[in-house]
Length: 236
Image (cartoon, rainbow, N blue to C red; front, side, top):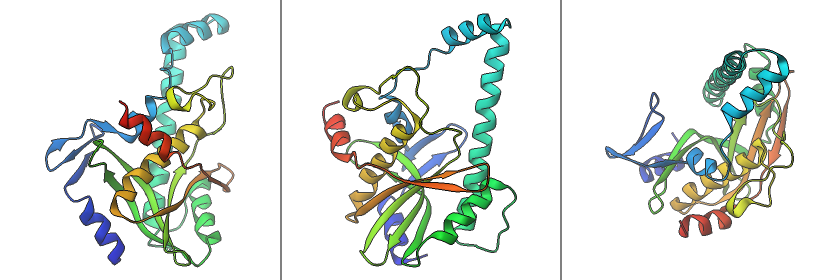
């Protein structure tokens, strides 16, 4: 473990994550909100009952069939994401591991394309905010040896990051942004930045690594929305 990683671990010492309940705690005390929970505050809840009933009528099937289909698709997407993230976590520091499918091949290509001055520091970076009391876990922390600053990255396996329905927008301080996965991930990574920069270390970039089923990837740089988020959290 590098000195930087030891320092970061020490800074967030006492933070634990319970996988079955997806809840964080600090020294045994529950942290009420996660990064994903804050992101959800900027989205209208999906009208599952209403939409599934409408689709069922359109397709001439039962509403339960539609619900089951959507639930199965969501579960498969979660299983894929979990498996791919686990491979990415292991491969970061052990390049001898062989990819078993196209998504894992995309991760290998990402690391092959990374410039030599960008180096991995940590994976599964668990952090909490000491003032606003929320927590989250970033996939990978990179270090730019040229600038002395850090880069946050997250793997994504979504079919379409930019899909939007009828021009729907996000809520509150992000009402100028379309409601799609990409914009939600931009907020997510900015929240990670808020968490990380409590350490006194600086983030220079936040990147989404979009893994494709053809074995390729697209790298997206994201906007820094920390100022908007700070204002939002300060006024809650």
